[in-house]
Image 1 (cartoon, rainbow, N blue to C red):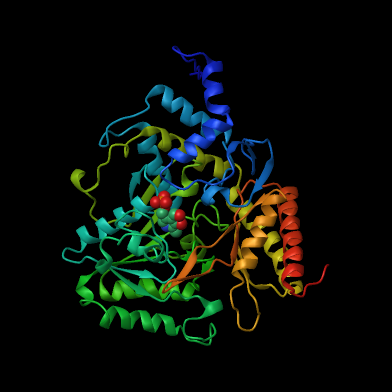
Image 2 (cartoon, rainbow, N blue to C red):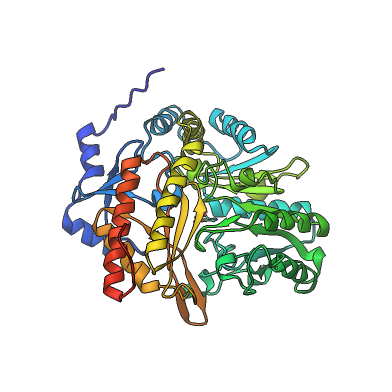
Length: 466
Ligand SMILES: Cc1ncc(COP(=O)(O)O)c(C=O)c1O
């Protein structure tokens, strides 16, 4: 079957012009119309299967964010785009309950790669995948409706999840729904240990505290349906939890009878140099949620569960677009592309290389307090003082701004909210598409270093050149 796409009412030129050009007046008008916030830069096209993107002015930018850590196979990978276009030309929408070939095959492919017996797919993304996990936990533990979520966690921005995402209640102008459903526990943030201890000498005091939280700080263990955890916190600032902590969490779930959900929204699909952090550590939580890199740029989410977990009924889960076959076709081919390009291994090798360069920078810049992460999932924690570890917030903003002017797109972690004070945002995230070329990685790291030099001089931090 050959893909032959031709419009019938409009000409190809008309459609192309509609999608690829816009005048200044329309931009101004649309910005005024928008009820949601919009970035200044207008991106127009990516390099197919690559890490670079162009803006409306034709400027080339190397993307160290993969657009919210999503484009693991690069911008508009030709095979993924072909799959989506072919699927759309065959059947572009079906009502939720109808199985389609891509949806069926995608479930089996995910089962094969991630080793889970049960899979639920959605076209809404990571938040929906978490909500499905929460519904599964509540269905499978009747009567339980409370969830444990970590300090600095992020799990989604729906009204059901706002309270589960650490900084959001402090940033929004309305009250989240269901705050009483979430109990927060300290994440094992070893660089800034909540107990001021050092790993491994601490003996995982944080895990003991979690157990006490389970026993004493809720309406009793029977009310706890699940614990949700990012095994490496992403929006919180690239914070890896030690393996023995994660293993301990699984044991607590077993001991007290509730479900453990790994939110691998950001960390799966090869990003960390393994298919997931669970793979990396040889652990299997009761459930795992995926999104972002799973769709190769198309909207998708997946909830994976162990055998024996009862599934959801139609009224418990259906949505209008939840059966749409286009993202499923794209995601299916995307997984094959990850395999064919050996991107899991590539992320590991390129990540090790980047980590070495970043650690070298750390030894030369007073501004860099910590370098964390694995694979192409790295973070640079900027501090005013290496001893006190006070976050260098303005400096981090400035580095990212300068780097962008020089052609590299970086992003920061989410803010920390204490009372009315918004702080932190001092971790620069390094998460390019896994297909990034070595020269491009070097170029963006050189740009980062140049920006660090300029900011160090501006603010008076010591540094030395190689
Ligand atoms: C760790 C994590 N979990 C869940 C989500 C929510 O995903 P979505 O925005 O697709 O609902 C995100 C989104 O950034 C995330 O980073």
